[in-house]
Length: 537
Image 1 (cartoon, rainbow, N blue to C red):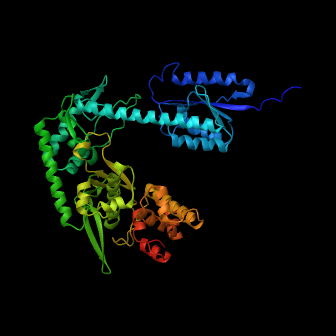
Image 2 (cartoon, helix red, strand yellow):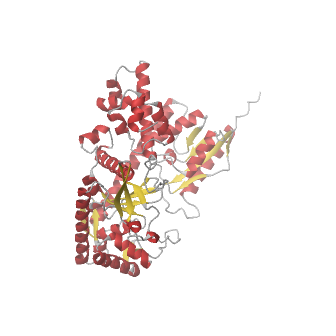
Image 3 (cartoon, rainbow, N blue to C red):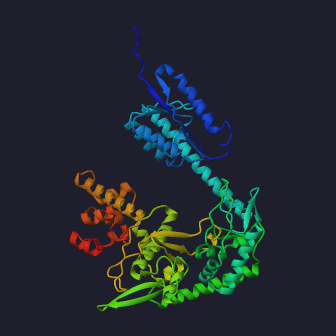
């Protein structure tokens, strides 16, 4: 009597390499992994295994995240049930994160997919096999964290020795054989920037001067061989250049200044003179903003470097405040930016909320946790003009968003990130007789919207557990979630939030200033009162 034929098993091979090193070779690590996996699949032909023709290769991508093109394509094949077995060289090729691994196993189980590592024997259908996998992934995650620590330590040691450790090369320099050398033409432009700033005394005027003269850096040759796009020297990049100690032959790292091994472009005397002038301008702007009710006075600009000055008008006894471009006030319409006037309360609200959230995040970062109590105890729930002056260098109004140039600490001025953030903001609204009839519509930041929806969902789950008798009190919830009881009590109030407010958050039409902290401060029991308090109709 002949045995019944084996059920066909459609197999897909997934390969991954963390770096792009040697990927250009005719036979690289991805090919080696695939060859081993193909041999394993061939050895299981008697079990009905057959290899599908599609390739799933991720080169130069870390296993710390699931956001990989080939992996996402593979998971889509799993969801459409086009694959029965996934074959990998080692399990850490699939992921190095235990949390991500749990998600993958759940997805595989839902769609009846198993996976095999050709160098590690296990069976995912048994509890012992799952335990083996969890142990392997735990070590893989540990290895990734250790590698990260080693990289950070190496960067710190290199910077202490004054070495350039990679990243975007500052204007005025070029990378030759992994060493920094002066680029003569760009260096001349950097010297001009420093000298012209001392002559003009204003970064805004310097940017406007360069715009009129058409001064821009030459395109650079990128690693992939392409030429970079030429960008204007506006306020943000100019401020970054003027404060960058790299140009005097120094490297700043974590609050320490180290002598660099590269050649200086700017003399010490010129650099110190520029820093003194920048400090004078900072003091003057702080004094102006402290004395003015318009907290962004002297700080806000349009996207062509024109200052935007406070202005107001009255309608039926109501005072409406704006910020208006100086190009309009001085009848230089052709030189005005894309936005010539904005509602002062709207833009000030956006800036205050963004500053507060940034300070709260910075305060919470050492413990990697964030709760409203953390913010309240630090006394940063409200943001006044002094806080804004200490935190923000410039505010630039664009057509569809606001660009915030953060004031950089001395230890940060040599980092790759130039310290700016864009916040969605709709500046253009119909005006009638020069008066704003209603506040400009400000769209909710997607990150804030996501945080709100997650908090509401969590509060509703907690309340459901209490109603179903799974948990007796909020104390148990606090213990289970590893949070303080006070925070659990405040967050649980979101379970009774007005359905209209929840729908507005889902639609993204809720007020931009609405945050988890604001919602949980003093939430009325009446839905109507909640809607009135937060301006949702």
